Length: 85
Image (cartoon, rainbow, N blue to C red; front, side):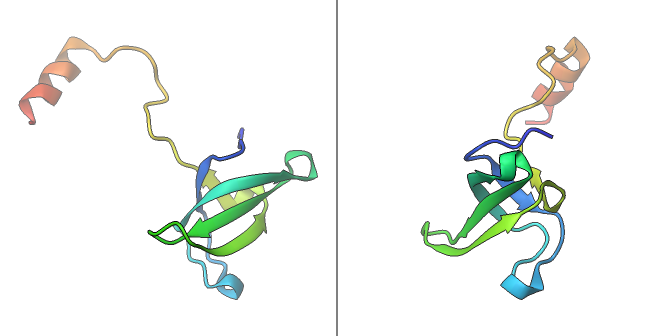
């Protein structure tokens, strides 16, 4: 897993001591201990930070906004996708 600065991440488990739940989304704002930990900020919809926590890689997963597979879709997949609209 390659977690980078400013990656969007989601919690993989609850952190009740911080009132954070699995699935909550945050942003990596600092890489700690040579990549063995990360400072993650959690913000509200207005961009106000409500919690900042140091987390280990197993506590977060990187969110992907684009397909990881860069190969073009087959003609069948493209046709099905177009007809679903």
